[in-house]
Image (cartoon, rainbow, N blue to C red):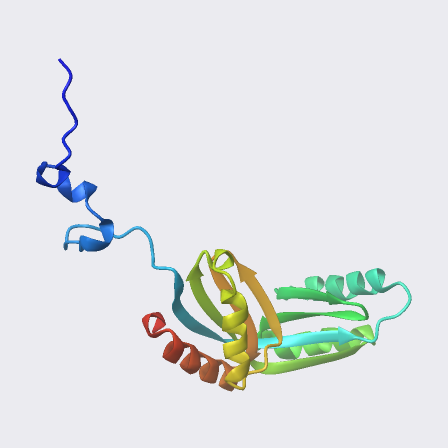
Length: 183
């Protein structure tokens, strides 16, 4: 014997599961597994220094490798490695800034190391899928007066290196624009 489908599903025992999910609030025993789209958190990680090596000419790849070998031999960990036509840049922990400056000076190359840097991290679920979200966030950070020195992105976050003061100003502006992102 087959059962006829009932057009009035709202009166069935599983009506909650069949109802519009936006109309059903989570109870204290339920967990939401998906975060809402858009910016949901902004955080600052201070304590970094940025390094730029420039003025490379001739066999630029070999010169880059020589710099990276010297940094490696000094056991300095780095992030945000970016290549430019005449050099490269990267980020280290502020605490190894002096050691890095000595290492780079020993290469005889043109370089600059700037302390007081922070990484501003903007979290947003599937941010690449939201048309214009990355551009909008970057524009808002620039409008805050911060200077973005490095930029990296992943599917769920945007990482920007800048001065610590700029990071604080940018975070305040983003929190004002996305109130749900207060960390």
